[in-house]
Length: 188
Image: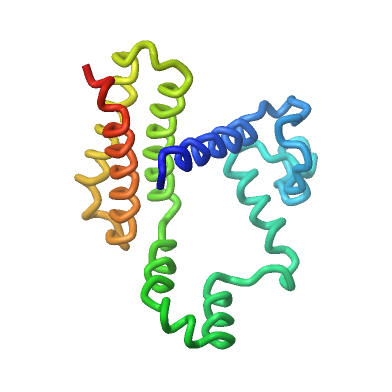
C-alpha cells in the first residue's frame, strides 16, 4: 500500500470514527442519510431505533444491509458464482481467492486488535502530515504502535487462524516500516 493510499485509508477511518462517536443528542449532520436506525434496539424508555453504542450501530447497519435477501449474497456465494460462470478465471486465481477467504476468519476480538493497531498507525501518519515541525512529538505515537505490535505478535500463537491474523499484523508492520523509511530524515 503506498503512502498516499494509506493516508486516504486513514482519512476514511477518521470519518467513520466521527460518525460512530456522534453524541446521541447530536443532529447527526456528520452522518446524514443513516438508514440503520430502523434496526436499532428499543431503549429503556421504550423508544425504537435507539442505538446507544457503536456496536449497536454497526449491528443495525449490518442488518439493514442483509434484510433484503435478494440483495445479499454471501462471500462463499460470490465465489461459487465466479467458479460456475468462469471456471478458467477462477482456477487461475484459486489460491488467491482461498487465501482471501481464509483471511476473513477473524473474531471480533482480533478484529478490534487489528483496528487498534491500524488506528495507532493512522494517528502517527495523520499527526505527522498535519505538522512536521516537531519530529520528537511523533516518537510517542511510533512507540505506541511498536509496543502494541510487539504485544500482538507475542500473543499471536494464542489466536485461532493465526496465519491470516499474522499476515495482517505483518502488513501493518510493513506499512509502519515504509512510513519510517520515507521519513527517515526526521529520526534525529
